Every structure is written in structure tokens, then in C-alpha cells.
Amino acid sequence: MKTCDQIRREFIEFFEGKDHTAVSSAPVVPMDDPTLMFTNAGMNQFKDIFLGTGSRSFCRAVDSQKCIRVSGKHNDLEEVGRDTYHHTFFEMLGNWSFGDYFKREAIARAWELLTEVWGLPKDRMYATAFEGSKKEGLEPDDEASELWKGVTDIDPSHVLWGGKEDNFWEMGAIGPCGPCSEIHIDLTPDGSGRDLVNAGDPRVIEVWNLVFMQYNRDESGKLTPLSAKHIDTGMGLERIVAVLQGKYSNYDTDLFAPLMDHIAELTGKKYRGKVGKGAEIDNGFRVVADHARMLAFAIADGAKPSNDGRGYVLRRILRRAARFGRQHLDLHEPFIYELVPSVAETM
Ligand code: GLY
Image (cartoon, rainbow, N blue to C red; front, side, top):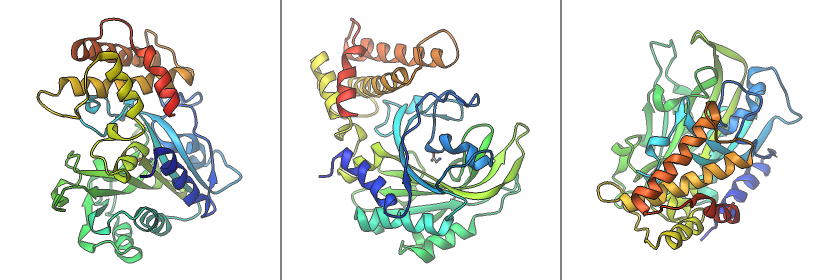
């Protein structure tokens, strides 16, 4: 079985082999972007390139970006713990083209990595394309839909349409944006998951989002075409690790195992991986594990719990972890700091 470190490395090396420059993750606390509380996507550190106000010495990049999604447009907090695949803190694997290749190459490369290099079953994959929006004056992305059928050997009936919510990616209320194609995998035992694409079911999950950056949204909500077209992709490391390790839940992978074992040791309770009614203890494990990672990274990158703004978000996460620990795991003494060595060891 491939380890999480191996999977992260293979992603980076695959794109390095295609002339991408490997860059470091930016901090989770964006120091120079007042529109963001936390880094919420791999593209944040490249926003200036998309807007045409900055440049780099390379036109293709690859990285694994530390992300936090607890505020603003991308906020997954309420899902965390209740399900097995949303996180407040996660790593996003991404490849970028800055005015270089566009949809054709992005789609072909994603398909090659998933199905040829990692050997994921082609008949279990679904791809979506943007169906357009009359309200925004945006046409359906026929080009992406046709490219899926032309440059990959995906089952053409597995290329689906999706609306603005899933297939038009925006960094925040303002900023770079564009139509996107998501790649989903059907993990149902009998391959019957077609109707579960984008239905919030863990048996059919989105693994990769390919964003075709074409617009900037301004304060008035108006979309203006960017001066060049770019590629911005995002694949949740925790999810792809679960898929490649044959696990049903991100919390069962080697990215979380030491932390889950540590929580079991602290509480004397067993994690059974249940969700839904009667899963309070499992919920507690997942919330505490997720929030310990988020807090450790946010504080290490310079954020501090406080009474307002970013610091208050951090304080709320700290309190939420403490509450779940107290209510579901019977932890009545300070415990979150004890988990930090396990986070550090894995990461
Ligand atoms: N920027 C791509 C994503 O976050 O899905």
C-alpha cells in the first residue's frame, strides 16, 4: 500500500516530469491578502499572476498547499466530524498553468495520473462540466465536455453537467474564478453510483477539481475576462490517499492513524468509524483529530486565538474541539496540546 508521503511525492513528481516547477506551500495565514482570513486553496499564492499584477520565472507549477476552510465562501466546518471526508484543515495537491496550457492538457494529464499512473478504474470515474448560467450570461462549457470525450477514454456517458455551485469555482466573494470540471469516483460495491455524483454521499466523492481560470469578479459582482487563461487544479490529499489506500474514510488512512490512536489512548475509548445517529464518540474522535491539525498549523503559521477576526475563528475551533472532547469523549482536563506531537510526527 502506498503511504501518504509517497502519494504526495508521486503527484509532485508526475508534474515535475511535465516541466512544472515544484513550489512550497504558502502559510495558512495569508499575510498580504485582506480578502482572506485563511489560505483556502492552492491558487491563493498565485492570485497576482491570475490578475496580471505579478509574475514568476516559471509558467507551470505544482505543490501541496496547506488549506483551512472555516470562513467565507469556502467553509466546511459544519460537515467536519459528521462525515468522513470534510476537514477544516487539509492539503490540496495542485498543478498550475499560468497562461501556458489550458483545458486539453489539464484534462489529459489528470486522467493520465489517475488512471495510468495510479491505476484507478476508468469505469468508476465521472467528470462534470459547467452547464452555464443565464443569470451570469455564461455559456455551457461544451469545450470541456467534448475534451473529456475526445482526449480521454472515459465512458462518454460518465461526462455529466453541473451547475454554478459545483462547476464554477470562485476563490471568494471577489477575485479570480472560472468554470471547472470535477472528477468523481464511484466507490459503491456494484458501481451504481451515477446518481450520487454531487449528492453528498461518501460512496461517490469528488477527488479533483480542474479550474479553467478565465474571469475576475469585482466588488459589484461583475465578471471581467482575465488577460490570459490559466489552469488551477485542486485535489484533496486526504481524499486521494483514502481512495488509493482502499479506505472508506479519510480518518482510516496513515495521515490520521497516529492521531486517532493517540486520542484512543487519552480517552480509553475505541474509534469505530461510525457516522450518523449513535455515532457521538466517533464524531468526537473526528472533530478532535481535525481541529488539532487545524489549530497546530494555524498557530505554527502565526495566527493566535483572540477576540476578533481570524483569532476569533481560531478560538471558536479551539472551543469546539474542547466541547466535543468534553461531551463525547469524557475529557475534562486540557488535552488538545497533548495531541500536537502526533500531528507533528505525521506531517
Ligand atoms: N482552486 C481549486 C479548488 O479549490 O478546488
